[in-house]
Amino acid sequence: MAARKPVFEYSAGGVVFNNGQCLMIRARNLQGRAVWTFPKGHVDQRETSEQAALREVEEETGWRCRIEGELPRSEYWFQRAGQRIKKTVRWFYMSPIEKCREPDEEVEEVAWVPLSEVSGRLTYPKDRITLEAALRFREHHHLEAQ
Image (cartoon, rainbow, N blue to C red; front, side, top):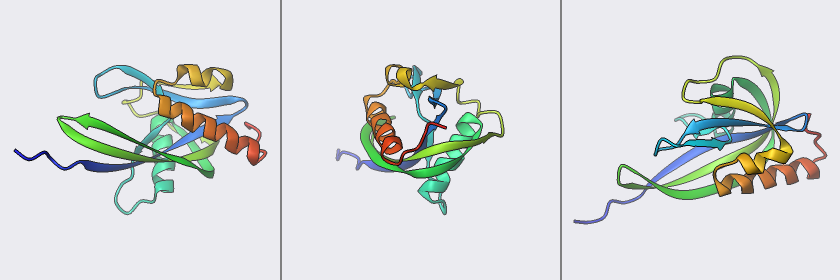
């Protein structure tokens, strides 16, 4: 039997800073374990990565945000139901505008976490790389964690 070809998925998400804190979510991974991460999700048809990132951040956290700039993409492989999947995530540095709704039920907790604690709370190593990129972006563009 021939191996199935891998599936390619595209997601977008945001790293949101405000007053020395970072917006994080706690959700469940495919194995049902609690994970701390940044809000992200699939890019829908006829939707740009920027639109998807803003929508996903709002749906998962309840916060309407604005994009300040793009961060490096992350790519990784995983398996779902025996299918190999390569996921590419476009990340954006964001600032909050307003709390506008309740988060989706898939998210167990939304928290503003002090920047000094974010790296230790993140579950995935690739998220730490994204965090470092966001901190460099903020410093390079002289953005205060407003």
